[in-house]
Image: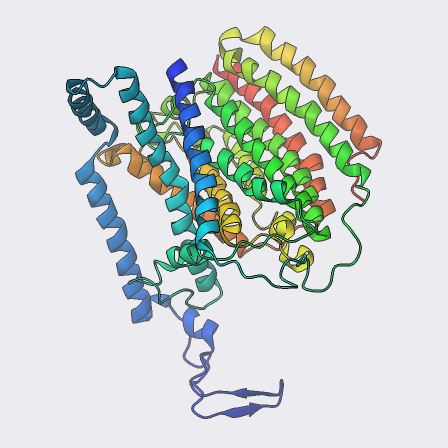
Length: 118
Length: 424
């Protein structure tokens, strides 16, 4: 089993070599022509107006927060899902309570307008 | 259909007063001509014959080759004995063997991109009644993607002055490395698995999630407002759709009682009443809902239409990869199609019994052939969606996830619990 995880490490090495290698080889092969306007941001073909240092909307943060809550929940659900069939009734009831609390949290977020994208 | 409803062929240019256009000779009124009966057209019949020949030919080759897994074992022992006779330590033999296997795993997304891009262009072309790539390669532009890849490889790497150089360079690498790593615990057939780890399902979702980082890095480092917006939207979307995607798999894990992807596929072996395969898609209600939620969330996870908000051409130029050119752009493309392949492989493992034959008497074909055919059919759906559905608006996209898919997938877990209670 440990060998299987070690082989993932080898795959990581292969993937890094491939990604870095193709980029480096393409850099070596490709032309490098200096041009006055080539290195300006393309954006949408016109001259860029303003900068990218803008305030990010808060709604991204609320979604990120909700995601973290539910992703941690998913992490708890995985080990439970593996054993639920052998543990039977009690495990089902326990998870129903756990999920119930989280779903009520989602319902609360919904009601308070945290899921509203405007 | 009667003969009168078929529009007559125009023999000379006619000025159409209704729309002010010149109707050219030989203009076909395509729909009525086709709807007559496609089988009456010789080209259609020939196409069907070619397709049937291809499928039968591939099936014959697959039957001739048989299972690949057992055939590799004698090769390994032969190579091992050869290396041992030259005094190579056993540890290094294992490392080199794993490295060779890893290169084959790397080939999967690479060859998949070569094929899938060409296939997508052909499908889109035929859906829009045109031919698509026809010239490069010997048959229907089959080598078009290879030519495009070589072209991208030889292009100049342009980095805008306002970009953060290091992050701009790192972003495609960060996107691509997880896209290759996710294939480690995914089976391609019986015994054709790179790393048979017990937590395969969690591993795939966890490693696949790292690519979001790369997309944010790409959007942020480009020094371009639209890229930044694309990156942020993409992060919000990918992160959101990861939840129903994860929850959709849970009923499958609950029933199979394992996180190992090969074991989940193996759990679905056998047939109910000797005819209906014991695939999860056939479990009443739970299986179908889980599959549909997983399919929708997978389409969203791979940034494909109708969920392609991050790279919506008509509003954000090209989203997070606007400022990328040459090989960096190719790496983004490669990883996108790698994730499409991964989703299809996962779906065939989770819901379609992996390498199991759909009917008992079709057992003579090896498992990898069934894996491949199920994956290709699912991939066709992915490519088909792109030319069928219009794009979601950002707010509706998020609403659809948080107010529909997530509650449905949570309810589906409860339904899975009820199913387990009924089965026990």
